[in-house]
Image (cartoon, rainbow, N blue to C red; front, side, top):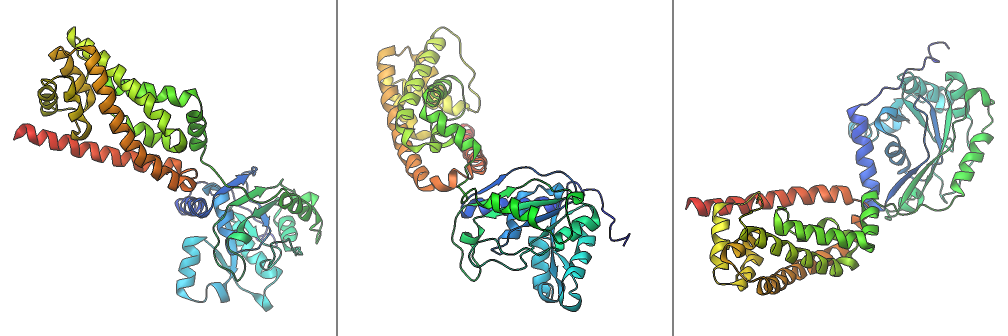
Length: 407
């Protein structure tokens, strides 16, 4: 008995556990959204959950960060019978095989518990024994309580909501949100052999809180609210103004970074971006007239030459900027060098910048409206991909203009 009761320290960070945790969280976010409510103590424990879907174990793995390393045990003669099944279970959920002695039961659970709790990991147990066909909580077997008492570890009741609708027993995948609700730990000294009522009460209360709700990225929530108010419009004006002076990121990127969180507010944002851009161009032109040239990062001599050539024809030359990749701040500086009057410069800049922003904004807004359900859950990964794509495109533009210089 003594060997079975040995419980290890939590294993800490492990790459395989982190990979599974991250993978399953993203899968659930992709197919409908995912939330975790509540907190758990950082120690080895028996995690007891309701069971209505094959998606339950991945949902629990996604709920606990890698240091917890929650592990489920599976019958060796069934789940580990074939090599491809062994590999799949190991990679996907890190399951531990157990022998079913005399048909299974408590002896097999103890064997698995020693393999899991003995290393400091947490044991996942579905005491119903089989998946519910209607999503309701069935009768719970008492093996989890006996394990908790024998190994002197707490039980953590956890309710999994939404997996029955997502992937019901014998059914097909139906995209929808999943929510994992963590209860309060029950210490082993507060448990009685074969009495699952404390666990049942918590699970029933957690399940009664209602269906799973769609999850949203916090970044998306912040930007969505900002675009609904003055902050989003002020940000658009500031972005456009900064680009007209020195900022190396185009004003349309504001729509792609911030505006897509609230597509219906893209049109007014375009107006503020244009107004800010016109103001920035006028300021840069005036500074240049007075011999104060703002810094122009990520530009080339050939870009400056092109801007000077176009602005030599007057204020209308700024329309050339819309499609050639030359930053508008260079056209503003060229306008100052050429002594172009402020009013025509402002009018043509408003027209050229506004037309470009409207064209780009229409495409960005349309794509954002279509991708809205995914963006609101995957906003941070979207921003990462967007940033990499923009950096790559900017590098190509600069390289192209540098070749013109060498040519």
